[in-house]
Every structure is written in C-alpha cells, then in structure tokens.
Length: 431
Image (cartoon, rainbow, N blue to C red; front, side, top):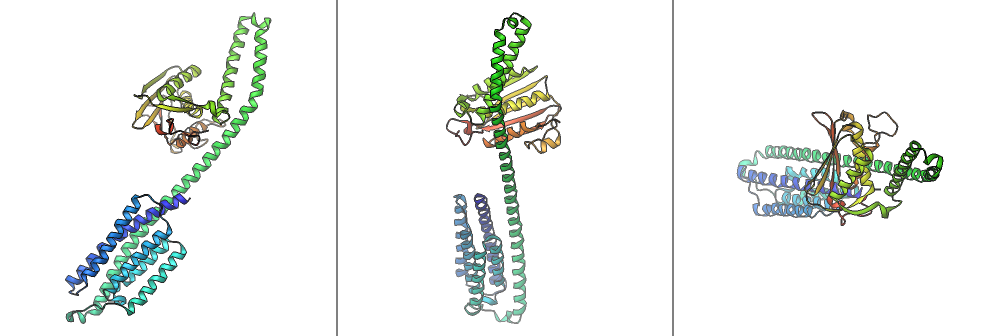
C-alpha cells in the first residue's frame, strides 16, 4: 500500500510541475500585456528573477522524478509553499492585495486540500491568509498612468476576470488529472486484491493437493504390494492374458505414484528434487517427449526454433503448468496438437495450437479466472487458472485467442532472467 501511495505522489509531483509550467507561461503573458499593452510599468527585472526561480524549481523537480526516489507529503507541501512564496513576491511587486490576481491563493489552497494531509493543508491555508493580510500593508504600488486613472475600476474588473479564467482553466486541468491518477490507483488496488485472492486460492488448493497426496500414498503402496504378490502367483503368471492385465495395472499404478510424488514436489515437500539445472531446449524437448509418451496424441507437431540454447533452472511446477496447456489442447482437439517454442528478445514463448471449437467469448474475457470453463464438470477451469498465476509469479504472461480457420492458440511467455540459474530464487519459483 505504501508503494502505491508513493507512486501516486510521484504522479502528483509531475502534475505540479506541469501546472507550474502553465503558471510561468501565464505570468509571462500577463506581465508583457500589462507593461506593453496597458502601459503600466512593472519591475520587469525583479519579476523575471521570480519566473527564473520557478523555472529552476521545475528543473530540480524533473531531476527529482527521474531519480525514482520516494515522494512524500512533506515534499509536496514544500513545493506548494515555494509556489506560494513566488506568487507572494510577484503580488508584492505589482500592487499587493489590490492586484486581482491575489485570488490565485485560492488555487494553491484547493490544490493543497486535494494532495496533502490535513495538517499540511491547514498550514498552507494559514500561510496564504497571512500573505494576503501582509500584502494589504506591505507592497509596491503600481504607478498607474494618468490616462488609465479614470478606468481603474474597469481595469480591476478585467484583471479579476482574467484571474478567474486562469484559475478555472488550471483547476479543470488539475482536477481532471488528479481524478485520472486516483482512478489508476484504485484500479491497481483492485488488481492487487484480486491477485491476492487468487494466490490465496492457489495456496489452499496446494494444501489440499498435498494432503490428498499424503493420504493416497498408503493405499497405493498397499496396492503395489498386492499386485507384486499376484504377479508371482503361479495361477496368474501362467495365464498370459491375466499377466498382461496385471502388468498394465502395475504400469498405471506406477504412474499414479509418480503423479503423487510430483504433487508433493511441486508443493515443496521434496524441494531439493523439484528443481534442477538444465537448458531451455533440453527442458522443453524432454517435456514434449514425456508428454507424447504418456498421452499418446493422434498427431503432434513440435517445432523448436529457440536458437542458441540458454541455461535455466527447471521446476516441477513449471512442468505441470506446461502439461496443463498440452492437456487442454488435447482435450479440445484429440486428433492434432501443435507446439512451437521460439525466442523473442529476452523472453521465450511457448505456443500451443489446437483444432478444436475454440474459446467462448466469456472465457477469453475472464482468462485465468478460477472455474471459468465450458466443461460442465466439478473442478473444471482450474488448468488455465494455475497456468496464468504461475506465469505471473515468474514475470510472464499467458494470452489466448481463437484462430480464423478454427481452433485456438495459447501463448505462454516467460522472461529468461527469472529462469536462469542467477535469477531463480526460492521466492521466485512457484509452489
């Protein structure tokens, strides 16, 4: 939450800098108009010094933004106080409280009320009020030419109108941008809350899967012992058909035990065996071959154009994520699955294509949400949910779209930096 607040304050500081540029331009135009058009002499040198101060303040602010440092309430308060000081000097040089532009103090107070904490806003209000009172007594009167003396009231009304228009324009600009910043912050907060809820859901699923794997371990071991005894029995071993069925049962049982072991690994039970050093090409080549052998798709087209191999640290959770993509494609398109691996800059992209009916619009709009599936069975819709969240944890993305000629394409993109031996840490790996 603090990081979000800091980011918002940085945007607000950038907005103050933009407003100050507008104020500098407005002051230059107003000063030249009054001095050259109305013929009212002004202390141009002193006023130019104040404008130069505002420009220098903006340059410092821009450097400050580029440093990516944290911006807090105190810094924004000091920025506004310096703006008040510069306005006060300009008003002192041009008639003090009689200058219609004195109402620009209200603009500073409104900006402070939106950006600052309560104590800072009240302090700013007290400072501007004190400056108003002080300018009523201490100021440099404007030398009004005799020809303009009769029209002094009209000049004041005109100046007040110009001040009103200027303040209104700046307020609309300011409030519009502030609302945009606040909406962006609220949207980011909502996204973080959603991400936190999804990660909590994954944790609970992981605990459930780990508990189920532990519970399944004992009956699977018992079945393994019984099958071993049956295979040694003469009455079964001499019957070729029964012996073949027992061998098939033993193979399926071993596969179940492998799946249970994989669940325990991905949940952190056997972390030392869950990760290993390999390379991108080796990892995906072996993974595709293992999936082909276990699923036996009717046709599988695998195209690896990654190029120069790169060392990575593989994780069983990443393997299960990729298997989920393959399984979803095979279920939608039993006769053909296309897999392509390529490198795009510093990221690897795994594309999985099928010839199935494609995704529904509601599924594409809510891609990666739990239980978002067209399959009408309990627990469906968790595959892509896990894929999206694991990819996000690794700094990657998952996109899906329907193809014009039928079928669907799902792309998993991962930064190689998070998979490299130097970039992978216990915190960065899923599970």
